[in-house]
Image 1 (tube, helix red, strand yellow):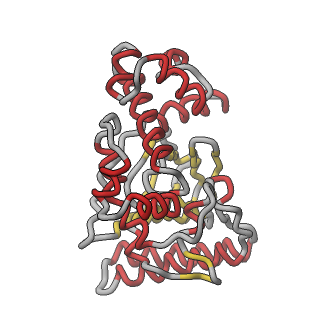
Image 2: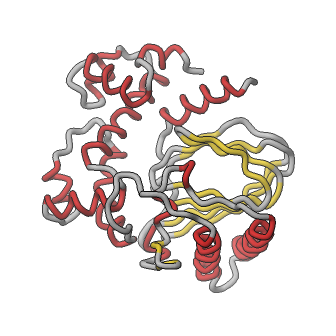
Length: 298
């Protein structure tokens, strides 16, 4: 399979991603596991409400985001933001990784070298911190193996050990990172801010086509309209309108991939005025028409 074909498949998968129930709740804000693949795998897509941090322990894994892809090797680390579509596949036999998915409150309001621990997750995928030296790679492998032992053993205090391990990984990454200007500007990101807007994030992803006004969104989060707009932009680096549009377009793309409904019908289901409205928004964001996108489905 050529790189161009892989890119097309990845693009289709990411736009058509369905959110996965990661099982995270206020009472259980972290989930962790170990992936081990005896043979190469096909590209799989994932999207979930929690943040994700993974450490590759051995082998090679391709990681794909909407506008960025990379190959992770032993000692590499990846970060995925909340509700961010991403795809992955094991490229060689024996690929193994330890993966932690968690809500912001699991870590809390920590600051690392004067930077909120959430800041790397808010950067665009291509600009997020990465392993850059052999010494750093060895250090990440050591931490990854410790996380692996805690995840497998589930000994008393294992979740506390995970929290400490995640912070150690993030500290190591931030030490070597020149933080870019966050997407959308705004001030520092706080876990409490993400928690405040979580109700509306879940509402939008549960029913993207439902008209949801700014006053309704603010009310669902228990905030005034002006405070909601400030907190939402600060924590997601997007306006509420831009976030809703992105979710509606992803919903429309999924319908294009999985149904034979007309473009007009899909536009109505996704909350667009008509097929022309969907067409213009789709081209602006994804640089192809709905019809062209549908023709490329696999």
